[in-house]
Amino acid sequence: MPDTSFIPIPEIITDPNEGNTFGILGVVLFLNEQDEIKYMLAPDIRYNDTKGTFPTFRFFGYPSPARRYSVVLGKSTTKDEDYELEYTDRTFWDGRGFVLASFLHEKDGKRVGFNGRHGGYSGGGAPLAGRVGVLG
Image (cartoon, rainbow, N blue to C red; front, side):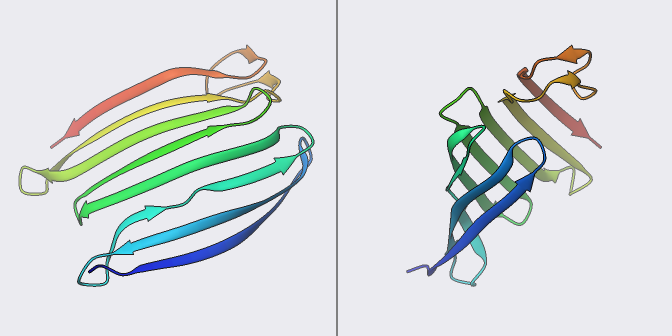
């Protein structure tokens, strides 16, 4: 049977816009028979006065050295959100090509001002975005 390891990590974050954030990140590593990481579960829960409570679920899968995927789901008690899905496969054309597919939705209630990443003046928030690529 595969082994597991649990690693609790305290979170202490200082940010001039959000103030102090405190939380706990619990990482569970699921190892295969060769003691390689097969899956990683890394949920956390954070709190600060700006965002309130912000739990996030994270799951990472490594089915082979050339394939990986991840799921990140987070929602604060205010309006902040973070939803991410990603899949990478580097097995095409004898390792010369790969596929990367990702979807992202994030909303930051305190991001105000010019937002170069999403363009223009913004009060926060990014629309659902996605991409798929193949290189050879």
